[in-house]
Image (cartoon, rainbow, N blue to C red):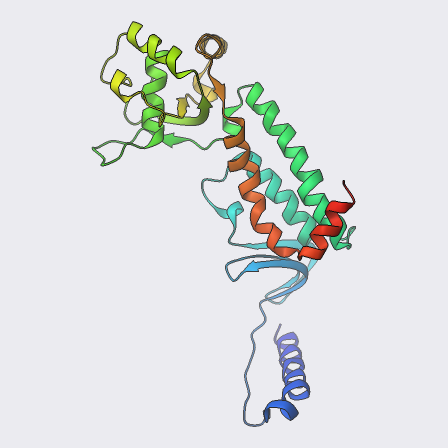
Length: 273
């Protein structure tokens, strides 16, 4: 590794001497710097200082048998990334850092924003229809203690307790599903149903209640799933597909648009119109 570091340092100094000495009165005998090389990459992408990835061929003195991805920052490294988002982002990282079969920048753009995007939109729709909530949501807790504002997962859990089954209490893990529903119909149902302290109260049912919390699949049997589907149908509750797609797909793709200039985007889109 020392030999490689010395060689690269000499190359940096030679480049600086060549390009800056005559223009900026800069000379390596008086303006020197040393570089430490930890990674040598074949390809990669840079969005920001703290969001980039590299396809490594050498890492701290060791040549790798095949390209390996070094990830820094980005949604893929966040604790609250969903399974569907992580799968999609992993495929994009693979394309941009390891896959050597595609070099054309226009093809790469369409691969990300059409082929990969549509693939995971389809998988997400299938998961929603099959009630595979863990695929596109992240478990959250009904936390203890008083709060100035009540987190959505708590209101969602109380909502579930009121209209489906009195299941949740403080400390339970829940999956938060964005929904739409018929408000007048729901208000009539609230007037009919009894309520306890673990349930959403009549005066708390407002348009701000736009999620419902659901049990993790390991705590649900087939009867529970049938009950949820039945109550959703009765009360005209549907998943908010736009919100789910935006959070899991569109928002995760947005940073990658910065990798492409407007001319590339224009040409890529013209091929699909």
